[in-house]
Length: 413
Ligand SMILES: [Zn+2]
Image (cartoon, rainbow, N blue to C red; front, side):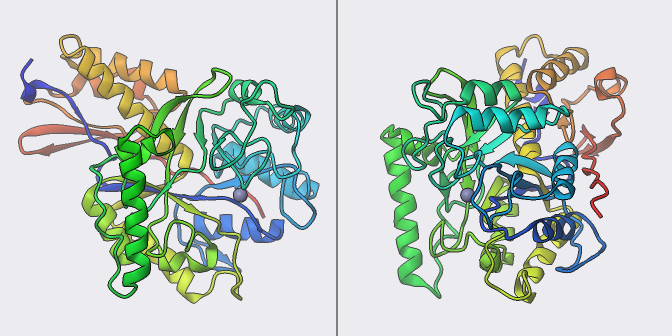
């Protein structure tokens, strides 16, 4: 089949140019009130103590065994625990941030997972935390979670629970993953010395990755995730986060400095490059009073503007990764079966199979059909049932896009 006869999958859902997930570790979030004020501020339009909601889709993370004074599942009360569970079910809490500093054994993992599974709540994303014993990363995060000979071993349990995407400490300054590697946008003329240092560090990570240093393979490819095998043989996908602050990846990774990261320059660059970004931050770390000061609130309003004008799709980490997996699998299928996926019917069965393999819905899937294909079989197929499919014509070709339904925020008071 000639090139122009191929079905093409758009890397980002129509009509957006890029995707972004705010992936916040909950470290230092003082209490349940603050935690859920943040959830409401992002995911509603209503009035909140942090200001009027910015009407986005932003997830949060949770851990279990933490010292007193740190908001966590076991540290809080039944009311907040039920709110946590409701937000896990709705997808607004989508990330397990290790089992916590005090989780040192498999027992802690078993206890936390059975608490979730008691009500059939599942988490799919894992992010290592500080140097928690249950972490997966050995080099940066000093974890033992995948070492079958260590008391903190739990990889088999967490995989069985549903964890498929794992963050093990990789952070980049490069704006936009899943697109070509470009270091532009890191150097800042107002901070020449420090930003040149950040640029140099990123170049070094890339060079080490090119030399097959395992720690920096993602930096070399600039992919947002890659398949990895954990120490016990468990197969998962490791993802990379980004924080493009001119001072380095850990310089602006806090709630009270996020206005130095979410800037018009950053968002324009991301939209212009058409990539995906999982933004590395800790929104609960905030020395400012009020909790999000004016500058921070303005930064989130700016992000909301880019989302609502159709330039950057803002979503949760889990949904961004599911979408990436879906189009990766479909592209693989298209490449390896060029002869088979030649029409709408065979394409639809591939989509259905890929979505089942990942355990996700076909939200946002955007496909450009070759000239001559009408899309009738795709639109009429059951695998897209309950989803509205948009049909637009671009340069004489049909583009079909399934909707991206927003997650519904549960009633959390
Ligand atoms: Zn942490």
